[in-house]
Image (cartoon, rainbow, N blue to C red; front, side):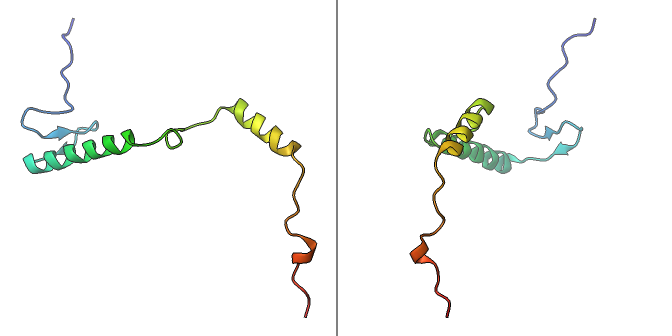
Amino acid sequence: MAGPVPDRSVSVDGDALVTDGREIEMDRYTRRQYFEGLCRMRDDYGSLGADDTTSCISIEDVIALAIDLLEQPAEPATEPNDAPKAA
């Protein structure tokens, strides 16, 4: 039986391997920039409020919302007095 397969996503010298085997050259500066970008993204997501982090709505909730909206009386788009007068 073969031993565990080593993780080849990152090699010791800092070059990363993509899943299809291509190698991405990353020097120390590039790795640092990439890491700082990930940290900024983490901080940005961490600062989102409850309204910003709602990512989905269930089908049941959508149906209930649609029923509520359909049961509300329709409002006129414009008042009759607001209509443009013909010249």
